[in-house]
Length: 409
Image 1 (cartoon, rainbow, N blue to C red):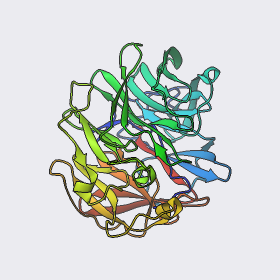
Image 2 (cartoon, rainbow, N blue to C red):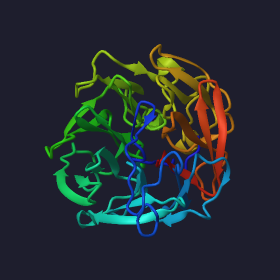
Image 3 (cartoon, rainbow, N blue to C red):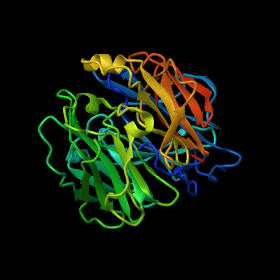
């Protein structure tokens, strides 16, 4: 693991299980000129690749390119469109880019170019920090952007591109110095649920419980908050084919378990059963029992119910200094079967650093980014397919890291 701060992304592409979101394609100006028919997904397919470049001073530049399929070989940002520090989301055949409190919609023409569409703003409420908002699409005319730094959920219409409501986020009080963000968000039944992390990285102190923010999907009623202290926060969540929602409390790569000073802390996964809004008291998947260690990198989906993680070798002591923790190369790659609670060695990941904890699904295939440089200025990322028997090399991003990978049409 290497950190200069480990890459964190939010609200890139929502998915249920391992089927990427899809809906009828639409376009602001499909031809890229004076209108025309919507490009056909069969004869004019499009896949978005978004990358981000880290520069000194915590400055980010975001790049978006469109390809007919998931690319192969070396990919650079030379022909990509450049943005500032932005989040990138794909929904309904369109691309949504948010930066500095301005959300803009783009279509993709037949030449696989981004075509500018309408925009709206919530900058009058303030501007969130880097990658600190999380957008979830409910329908073609309803989306939520969770902005805990601003204390609101922005309700907006992706078709009309207008802000329709502001919902106050009366978030549970946290100690001064803790930053809060949504690790991810999902539509779960009639609700939108965000899996929320709070922690102080300077003091190595986390909020000592998993926290969910639950907002009704079809009203502006204020969200409710559910907490469970059985697990530390800081891990992804997954919605399975039965509608059960699994929330991972990994302590942010195990860091807060190692250094948080919380007695009897544990990293684990909990469940919210379909049709409910409370954690199931009878379900807990303990990381140490499954992988041999409480220190796991975020679990990455491979197939339904199978995940790849890298678990700390229990024969190696946890370093006294956090910098040594991030630089350590003692993690063992494992394929975890959630149903059986078992894990087996997973090949091909030795020599790579973790960059983020995002599962990205395109056409039923899971993609993951790794790096031999770590998340440093001028670093590179290898984007691979994850399969139960190992990885397949797909493409290499030169000079930056993967922010989003999604099929547009």
